[in-house]
Image (cartoon, rainbow, N blue to C red; front, side):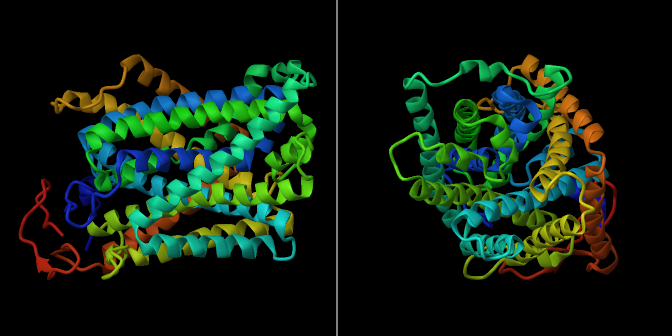
Length: 487
């Protein structure tokens, strides 16, 4: 029977032989860059524009800044503890509170579930620009299932696919920027729109409202921590790849947001389910609009695919780690003999995301889903979970400075980490006050995690450790620090 006390060893006891170190620094850079770019610009730029007005690029800048400050904490902690499990590992080592570690781990898992659902819905919106016949929900479900198959093939293949798709999505954003350059060069741009706020209240609160949505654009960079155990020379490669990828994405975000604001009326952006397509439809460059719209819709789908693939990688690795520690049912630790992928965790993750999609679309169809669509609703749920995680990770970075660190450990500036805590906490308060119904979705996902724990606690095998795949299971006689039998 499992005990939550074992969650504090979530990653520290994983055997390096189980996960192959095959991700180079450049692969990790594109892993981060591709994850970040696909999750914001292509999906939520219209919603951010609606919240702020022409100055919505400031919201992206604010969200990117807070997230990058958090990234500094991750970079410091990963170089100290280059193991899978990410935030769960850092919170465990810092606070030594098993239940808190367990909750944070479930928050991590839940955030990726909600993010994947939001992105899959965004994918279906762009797909409709190419072929309107299939129902959006069907397209979203097929999309998630297809990525689960890619993930099953293997982590190295998944990351290489991620890198290829990153080049495609950056090319798409480059086209948007080119359109902006052509438009400005004609002397037709009205730069005053970049400082306009379409709100009756304070411009500061408008930016905060937009930043709360734009923050979703940066969620996902923390997924890289969960493949630290599969990264070559993480102490050297991880800080460069993580911060470099986030800064690069932030610059692209701001430029693309400015381009959209200059070339398309803000009302048009705000009302569109595929807002960046409106820039293409503005017919600024001498290419047939119909051809460009189709091509760009395909590019946008590639971008969203990129980010969702990373989310599915993360989900399966979190479940794998928790199962190895007997926190959730051991079936999630099953690794396919040939592909070396946690296939049961992959199937379960795809089913959870599919359920979120079905519930969201059902509520919308019944007219009881509120004013937000599935994309915005699940994005908000993701932001709530990640803001809690980010704040605790920064605190953990401070606490763990009490420990002796290796000579090659990256150390983040203390003042910047302090600003990061304030930024995360402020955005969290705003999001919850602005959309309290998001807490119901959060509660449902947390309940699922607790259910898995209860199943393992009452039906799991007592007194056994789960050995590396391919070896015999043995009964352990060692004890934990609490004096209980190690399982």
